[in-house]
Image 1: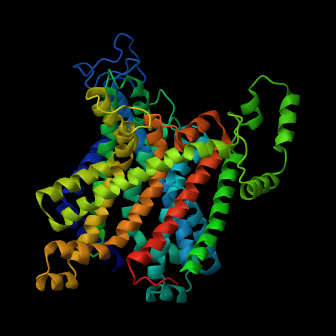
Image 2: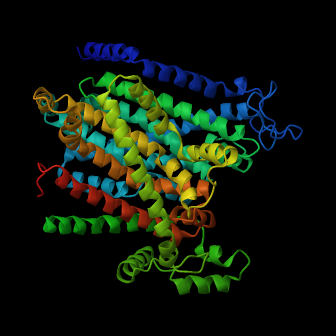
Image 3: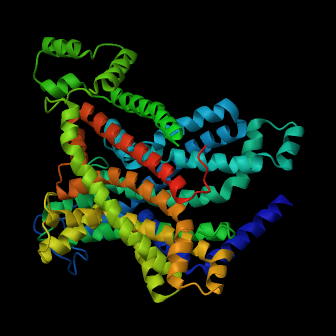
Length: 285
Length: 307
């Protein structure tokens, strides 16, 4: 019975999503981005660190479609490899905040009382520090590097997931089927994982999509400030930071990486908005 | 009312103390010896030891934490900068006005632009203007602040030469940073205003007001807008905090010597007391703004009874 219901819900969600023009465009862009990231070494015409001192800061041409940077590296190839970093950071950072925040929120909402008070106060304190600042402090403490960047970005959105999860848990906690599960002797862990979690999926999915967009923006910002990925590995924000001295003469260096970031974020935002409308048609925002 | 305000201010104390503990702890466990940062790499072990004992760096974690909080709370002393050899509070106080000015104007600008934009979109739902604005706000929330800044510099100072690309003292210099910082805030405020207004406009009392022949402008501004204000106010308050944090990036792009620039330099030099002080200042400002927004709710919506 449960399985059947689950399928039909998925089906209706997909039908509603397909009607949302922007969300479909978002999915198509995201699909191409993922393909680009997976097959980066096949798609890129040059290597990301391949320097050519005969071709320094050449504007877009037939051999280098988006031009070359200050070391004569092909900008298009670097953008293609950069998609790997952005998607990885987005995915893993959000997984960190989803798992940690989800666990904190679920425990707080399920057990209530003093546990809830303590956990949610800690989350409130973290919310008192503006997220970008916290990300900057943590990543400066951890030092540069891809993994540290993911942790720094991931930690910052834990409170958002915790609050969301707690609210979702509270809304289903009092229902009869939870009581029934408890009466049958299910453990707390089992109740949370098998009975409460499936009923909290909608808001978590929406928040996760929007958080991936946010995480990619943060990662680019940290790299722009020199706290993220270290050269020569290409990161879109880092590429913009390197292009700053050449803004006057080689403006294309400052335009393409920014476009790549913007298109990615637009796609994810469209998907997130679409999912919110599709998963919860009653709640119009 | 006064009692409520005092109670809310009292509730800020544990939050600020916890922020101090968190910041101190993160930076305490950060690798890198402050003595080496201040004295450089080629000094004798004795000099390092002398420096460490003089600054109390060899004390246990809790003693150092307690001392930091005690000095900050009792003497308003946030320690000394490792690099600039001056007190953190004096460094901060010379930079704070610039950052506040930047954030304030950005909030003012985005409110003045975002709310009318949102109202127009809600009133003329599904019109061309509405679709264009919706698209623009989508782009607005998706553009990284530093890229917006770079593009504005490219267009208005490199090509057109209208505004300078750095500094923040004259009106001319203030335009680009404020627009840069406001970008995403305008988009968010317009979006929230639109959806909040749409919700209110559909309610029965608005239909009543229209049915009795009230002028449309009065219906929108006197009947609908006040009821739509709560979510708008919330997002403006949140944006103020975000903009204080985001000023770091804007200050970096436009070389503005505010708190953000100070902190960025401090991060590159591993000057931890400055980082602690800067983040602490912005967090306290953030908390105060949230408090003010909460208090404003009661003024805007008399239904919210102050408890």
